[in-house]
Image (cartoon, rainbow, N blue to C red):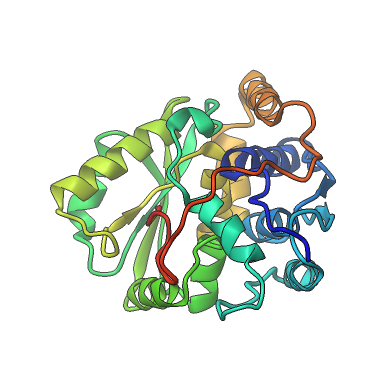
Length: 286
């Protein structure tokens, strides 16, 4: 049986996602690697890019049934989650634990980008939070929508543990959410991530009911806009706020390539293994 390994990690996958989305938006084609050896890495990229990029996958680091399950979910018309039920193997859980383990900021690619997004969750004090957002960033698109369970799976594809996922999905689908696309200076994503932590602390947010989602890196900011506001909205705001700065786009993509480094087509890195309870995520990210 194949021994499970974590894959290339969230930071490098964010770089792959950034190359995919920035490449498509700026030049009409993905600049991301065509092959990711770990099946769950390839699946995550397909899900987070809303199916725009579907890298071929090897089978390194996961058993054959897992590789087949990941490939089938990634190749659906809209990439989907293969389900949160228990499996005979531990391939997906080892990968997911590594993806959701706490990261230092230096382990995420954070090149300059002017666009980010906020999702105000059910029951959140919407007006107060939006006032705080406007004190730092500019609102460029606002919409209200009702999330589905499938939306939650695509927004947090690396969440794991049946109990945690069910609890989180019940919360996020319990009422409407407000989607706010935001623009600012080149540090917009980093500024938004700091603001998110401040707002949560000021509101006494808990581990689950935390009121506000904002992405921690530029690539996932673009992915969130595409999924939650729509690809047409992403194209429009990207053209207005990013395309005019071709140097900035080129520098961001160069930063992603540097973050991937040499040998990014390998099977992945075997990181430290930690024990977790059956349904306990390593961290409640986002």
